[in-house]
Figure 1 (spheres, helix red, strand yellow):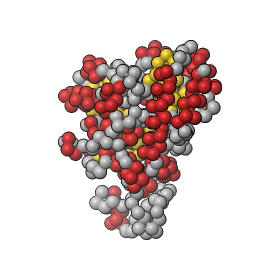
Figure 2: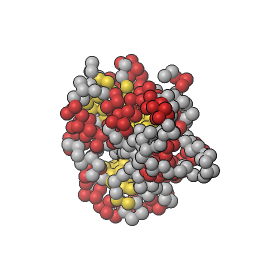
Figure 3: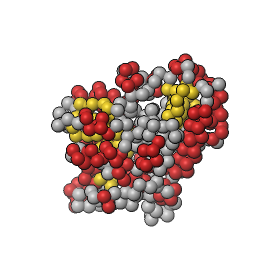
Figure 4: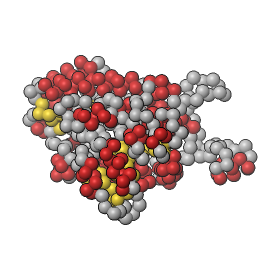
Length: 401
Ligand code: PLP
């Protein structure tokens, strides 16, 4: 893939969010795409069936391999991440973890090695730390803010540089240009979990990343009512990813969830605009609060990688983390006192959510690994929704008082 075929580094417009992957239904004229729940698709004759299996024609065969509703969503996600470039495609999966597992195993086999961030989503960390070693794939965890830490961990059997930027829940960033340059020099692949950013805030393919994964459960779907995931990359690597993710592992997205996620995407840009604006106001307010030791938000000048954020993100995201003074006890008090913001895991929802990673999403991480990853006992993460900005900010400040 040469540079000119890469997507441009600009956020997808509302027009793309509404229209991409939604061809008009010529048979009925329906304005909204139909929901196809069918498992199998009838053939006109034996020759068509044989041709479908050899790939001579494009006739649908079986829902785990391709379903029109799921495929329309895949076209939409590919358009969000890669613009109009025909060189990229997407496979939708049953969850973000299904996407991550299939993406890693597309790049690695037994005997291979991965370099991954110390601070990352707890279950992704667990996959690399506990599950994949059983299948002969080892991981070294590094300080993701340093490209030289990635470089220093590379071994002769390294195949993949794993990136999560911004990271859950520390909001630490990884320099996409630097990691891609390193991977090109060493002949490695780069996978980016871009869930926190969404394509509205960041488009890693534009930097030459090989695979982007999303938990569509989060802001892409946006309404807290559908679990789903996606992998996006160049056509050659995606052919293998699709075979693994859905054909063999069976981690296929249900058509019903595909419909819900596609509906969510139509307002992605509008929702992200409001949620990112609230996150920015919240970060400023928390930075002024006497009850807060530290704020983590890539859009705030106090973030140690604010300059990097400006150079690789088009907006700074809807998530803010902070360390409340008073440690774990004060952290828990805040969770119990919020009224507008809901105390629940997950993120990217239309409703604002607050969580305490040390006791929930990252509880499976050993405490020393958690601390090394910057996830202190009192760290609180707020996912800003689309409520009025003042309602969210006042609620969090009141809970802190
Ligand atoms: N990646 C990140 C950054 C996440 O925060 C999550 C879940 O919180 C996942 C992946 C997993 O997504 P899912 O719950 O859809 O499997």
